[in-house]
Length: 261
Ligand code: 13P
Image 1 (cartoon, rainbow, N blue to C red):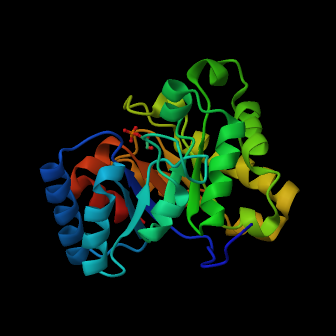
Image 2: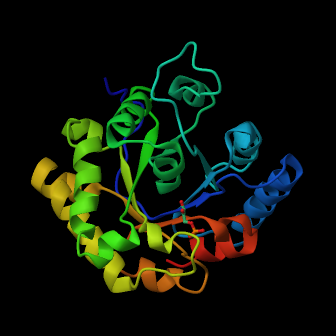
């Protein structure tokens, strides 16, 4: 099933998830400001921008004009291949626009659109078939952490959606740990909380796919990550970068985060 177009190794990455924000004009201004700023302050990491689907072409055009400065990703994909699914976007469509990445299973999609681990497994499958790297999101709710269930919750999300893939297939995935209580709340996970969960996720991967695959997997942190706290978070051994929401809508803040390695 896997299309071997490109192979991923562990990387430092800062990815911006614009969510459902910006008009066309604002999106154009933001993407232009980001590439301009990245050219002046080249970060020591890969930078990805995930705009709303209607702006993917715009963002790709900018990224193509400034090669190697920026990669583009989508925020969501259909679990179906193609056909009569009004309003949906197929992985093959994203691939035909040279999309490299796609976020899957963001907690907002799980919460507001009822996405299940089983559906997410299909979305990941569609992306892998089309040689797009899924950025698979996982993370616990506040009550789950308070009850001491956070490891179990994240483990179930990852196992149910991802552990039936082959080692080769899994090697094309990125993981984003996003504790739900930290998203858009200004309440960042402490560096210890982030490192502890990232290390746990890496152990789970090692148990299933072996140490080499685990060491090669990029694991991003998301949840109120900003220019002031990124350096401390990224300094952790198992934190390979960030998935940034709010702060990715301001070019200077976003590029400052990318320059935090
Ligand atoms: P915030 O950075 O706004 O907390 O959002 C994080 C997020 O959900 C990224 O996907």
